[in-house]
Length: 173
Image (cartoon, rainbow, N blue to C red; front, side, top):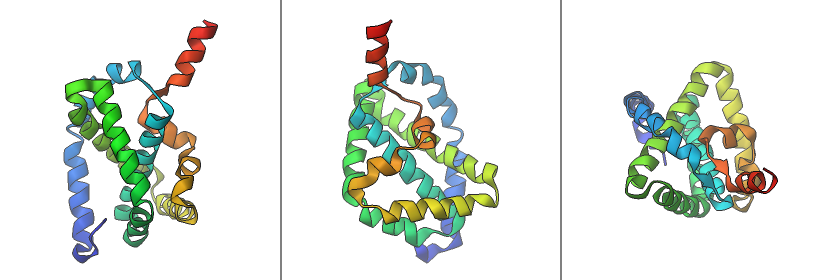
């Protein structure tokens, strides 16, 4: 959860962390070829999509003063987010072996940087967009998270391919 006690200092610190984290991102990008060779199962994709959504909402909370709604999201979705986080950790261990934890950390950093880029690109319209996203997420139950995260912008952000496409290509190719 985001700490309201520190007010604007939290946003400033988060921005500083994201800027510092940008230095880490090229290391993740350098390993992108390995990522593109790994296909993600349905449960992997659900975990990836949940992480993209969570990160987008975190950045929106810091950028648009939506801390209370982010805290509501975390509280409401805590169980499903915990399950998806564990699944994501397992996926990165399978995909990257001993480097799984480092690659997961780099992935999370990249997702935060991508979300921060959206703030810059959308400018004043970003907070309206973020408000609509919070409205949608909080109007749904945690059991509906797959429906909420089934959006091209979420699926496209993490960069992993589904294994289903891989299997269908092998059968037809």
